[in-house]
Image 1 (cartoon, rainbow, N blue to C red):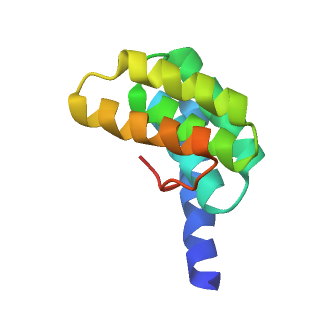
Image 2 (tube, rainbow, N blue to C red):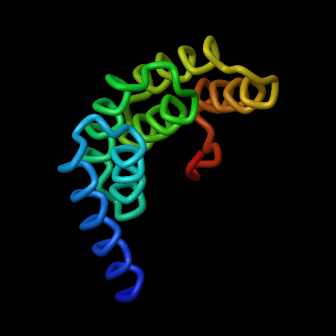
Length: 117
């Protein structure tokens, strides 16, 4: 566990430097949100994902991750809204099917795969 935390700390240091060099770098911001998620800092992950969407508003993987984060935080309505938006912008049938399954699980109160997209 300690080794994993050290890796997250190191990753976060690098990502913070990348964002400092280019504050509009959506990839570094997204990766930072994933580190927050992996370390259980869901509120920080949600804020970061919202910031990423300002730079990349139609990226399905970002929308899906925000939907999952909202669900884990208990923000069911917001999760549904974000996943419906992701469904509208999904470019492939595979993405659309995965999002439809997540929405069905959300409506049923079930637990979908809360992994990283």
